[in-house]
Length: 370
Image 1 (cartoon, rainbow, N blue to C red):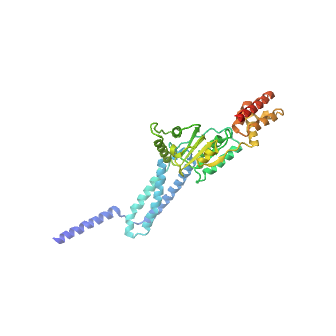
Image 2: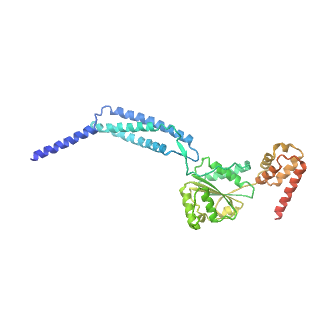
């Protein structure tokens, strides 16, 4: 009886082994050729991946992101690239019998590569609009002269310095602070330095914490409850900004120092803050890297005035000395120069020019008396 049972057990084992061999083992002749075919198709797939990545580089712009299906395809190609050398190593180090079990693995991997080759024939764009991206190109200011461009470049250098988180641009009214920072905003939107969101807020005089919180939230197209107190609102705002990743917050026309913590502006290496102010003290008390906006040089001031008033008028020998006196009285302030020049554009009447100079002198005298 025991012999019968043992014979039955041996028979079952033999059937199991035969089933394994029939289902999973193939005669390994030619498996090296299968591996070579797999590697050749792998190389073809990697060539396709390089083409896809080149297309992504050419299509990717600010406000765009790579399609999810394209990202997944690239990840699968990377995975296959890691698996094929391991499979090749197993085949190379296996015995004749063991190779028979690897034939199907090689073929399966070859089918996966073929499927990726087929899926990688993307005919449509590889990128889509990134709806989480925030930022707006602003109109190029009319006050752009070399002095303003130089300050823009100075501010951009601070953006490239990871140790600088807060930048304060200060100077007298009309000197071109907003113009310089507008150029910075538009430069950042080109994507040379990667930020997820770029938020512009005009603060203004007597802006309370709650008003500033509302302005920042509105600029990001989010809402924070009006019913909550300042502290809870600050927590919400800080969480939103932190979740956005690398951000730039531009606060134009700041009159008074405020607490970043009370407003809800996180102070971290992820974010950069730029503020403009008339006050050096405000910039210093908010621990900013200070950038001083200087009045225009005489050359830049004359160039700006001539451009706005009309170059043809500046050929008049009678008008020229009066125009130069007007520019001198504008003290290198771009905003004043543009206002005065625009009001005189196309005007060639000498008495009117003399009256304009006299009126400018009177207003300046009144300003200093105040």
